[in-house]
Length: 179
Image (cartoon, rainbow, N blue to C red; front, side, top):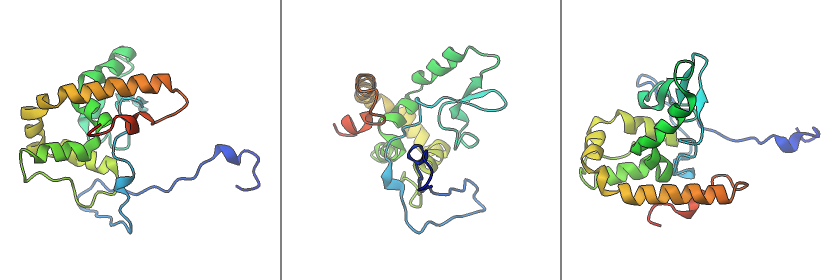
């Protein structure tokens, strides 16, 4: 790679392997979860699968989170599918605070709710969040208490991102949790 004239266009990244199957546990030498708190893919990546499904995230967890599948791009209006995700408050909340903060919010109402202790990746925590019926009930009962704050920060983030188009992902640092 060092001798390739196009090497500046290639960036190597260390990533974490995740298993979403209960019968196969993977342990990580180093838990790297804390590297990314908010989901930078939700609402900004709009994935088309080979079978025409439109997905509201990078697609890594789409087979495990039915709510990420928005519909079929071959039979539905593409722009309507894209904009429909903005009506899903949990998706907006993931973009602003991420799944760990959503777990923390729910835990203020139910002390038995905790983020998975062994999550090595934000997507792993997101899958667990969507599968946790107890957490989903708490969110359904109490999400209205943070809607104003989360939506305000979401719109500020979008405005900042539009004003700084060459600074990807900079918006999350500007109006993060507690800002």
